[in-house]
Structures are given as structure tokens and as C-alpha cells.
Length: 275
Ligand SMILES: C[S@@+](CC[C@H](N)C(=O)[O-])C[C@H]1O[C@@H](n2cnc3c(N)ncnc32)[C@H](O)[C@@H]1O
Image (cartoon, rainbow, N blue to C red):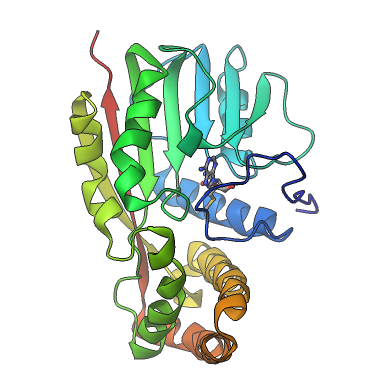
């Protein structure tokens, strides 16, 4: 995984609430998370999508999800949309579009058969969620599908060291209006219903966090350490003493995750646009 991710450049659509710095190592972290989730779900999406012509992945990150969807549907156009560029050398059929979801999607109504969005909780203020989901639905064609994937703000079954670490890191989210209470995770299917979708379904899975969980658990532990390290760096700009405490907690929390057998819950919700 030697691909590196460029930082937002001048003129990039970077006025967003996204809390995670665009560090070059984010490519490796997001791809590990992608592979772990795909292994547990046994698929890249759960909506009953068949032979789509046009697919949109909002907040695509590295683009890995979209690259794999291109391989599965070689005749489809797959568009990855993000604040920053994705990995180089995409497969044929893949296009990257830079932009900010919070300023609206630069696509016409009904342009896509399937719109997918995963792990945007750290980029969409909690009050902006209904409008953002409405925007995904707007660009979906009648009869097309929208799928959302999110995690809650905390792990399940984590011990006091990890809980304290989350208390500190979540201090970054509140001032940006981001979710600090798990409201987005709980509301995912409701957002789709409110946006007018039908046949809405929700599925939850728990991914093991730590070496006790085999390959998936190891991937996610690495992802967790890298994500928290990025957040500690962001916290340092706000409060050096809180960042020192968080870094110390992070080292100890890696052992605690295994001892407590903590899990990373994920919700997948999807629905169909009437028509
Ligand atoms: C946690 S990553 C998830 C990436 C990918 N969906 C995945 O599952 O691997 C969140 C991504 O959303 C992007 N993002 C955050 N806020 C955004 C916004 N307002 N508009 C577009 N992309 C955004 C970030 O740049 C980042 O690449």
C-alpha cells in the first residue's frame, strides 16, 4: 500500500467540518478499514443493486470501494466524490470529482442508479445530516438505491482507559457541530425514510477490535491506532496538555481493547427512491 494521498491544495473545496487531518498515512488506514468491513459483510454493499450504469460514492476517501465496484460492474461509470483526490491509477470506468457535499453535489437530479456514502460522521455536522441525505436522494434516479454506512461515536465494551481517550478526542467534534452522542448511527435508517425512500432496511454488525479478533481485529486495531494518532495531532493544536494525556491513554488502550474484547459496531442502512 505505497500510494500516498495529496493534501488539499490552493483552491480546493476544503471549507468543511471534517475533523480528521488529510495525512498521507490515511490511505493505509482507510484501506485497512475497508478490507476489514468487506470481510465481515462479505460484500461491498447490501442494497439489492443489479447491473447499475452509474454509481456515486460520496466521501470516497482513497477510492478503493469505487475501484472494486468498477471491477464488479465493468460497464458502469463509478464516480468517487471527495474533498481531496483519491489514489492514483484508478481502473477504467472510474472518475474522481472533487467537491464539498456541504455545498451540494455537482450532479443533475436522478443521475445515478446507486449512491453510497460511508463513514462521513466526522465530516457532516449533526444538524446537516437530513439535508445531506436529501442531496444524495436528489441525485439518485427513481427506482435507484441509496446506502449509508456509519459507526457510533464510541466502541462497545471498551474499558475506562479507552472511554477517557474518547472523552478527550470527542472534544474536537463538539465545536464543529459533529455528532458526539451516536445520534447519526441511531438515525441512519430514519434519515432515509425522512428523505422519502421506501423499502428502507438497516443491518448492524460488530467488528472485533484488537488481536483477539484475528485478521479483522488486527486490521481494525491498526486503523484505530492510526485514526487516534491523527486526532491526537489535531488535539495538540487546541490543548497540548490534553494531547499529552490522550497519547498516553492511546498506548495503554491498545492493551485494554484486547483484554475487554471491545467491538466496533457498524450500521448499514439502505432504501429505494420511489418511481
Ligand atoms: C473516514 S473517510 C471515509 C472514506 C471512505 N468512504 C471509506 O469508507 O473508506 C471520510 C472521507 O470523507 C471526506 N469528506 C469529509 N467531509 C466531506 C465533505 N463535506 N464533502 C466531501 N467529502 C468529505 C474526507 O475527505 C474523507 O476522505
